[in-house]
Image (tube, rainbow, N blue to C red; front, top):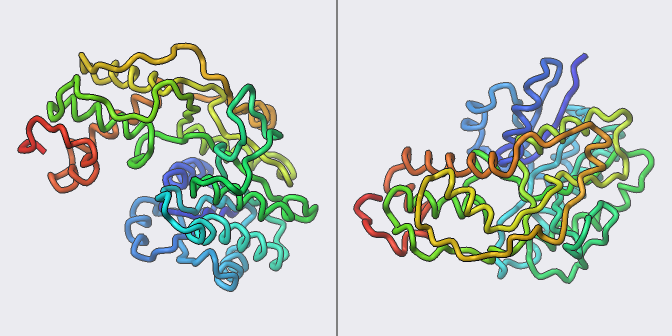
Length: 343
């Protein structure tokens, strides 16, 4: 029997892996939305089995028509804005990360669909990073200053009535730092990988000061492959997970300095002059026992595997890119270049 899925944010990083995961079942039909029709050709070539729709997710009429036409059994709402400037007005977060979630839920309710709806959020909403952080831990207040965190907090607060609606099957997925092959923009793994690649290629001296925001800080890093597999397993839970919040996390934390050390081992670059950092385990863990209990999910890629994958991806970008593209991707780290002619 055919089962229909609708994935929002078709051009997104997690969506790409989710498409591949869903494609493994011949009985799954996958539909996806994008806000920009200019992406259609590229996306269709990359994912020929995915049926694409151009939809403004803040437009109730468009969303309702899409749902009525497809009648999906499951919706994974992944669309949204991840990268903000601190100066961005609050309205950008509202339009990008709050209004679409509300519109999808309202449209699904008006259409009378008994659809499973999974809304993407982030583990960054938790108020405190101490101890074993379960889904019951308190979240931050809407006074949060970082636009991305604020928008996800506001989204979760806005959809609370739907979580409590017995007739709907709405769940929130709180992701930790998701990374892997194909992740070009990120604050940790890809930022570090680009710096190591420049040292590997002789563009920057190995002992040049590394740019980071604190090697002692803790981080939970999960492979995008493991995250996508977790989502598919959650969808298979009988009866759905109405009103549930689930952490999709590695379930272990590491010092950020460990990432630099792992990349140095993978690259073979010596004398990187990594500053000393605290070697004890960070004081928090985003607990994923609920996910494991519900689905039997287990993480398959260790921190070392994930870090190596990101490093290899950034190295491949360097080798296949022209000078203009290299400067765009690696430009922030080229200030101390030894040989700009090689870029």
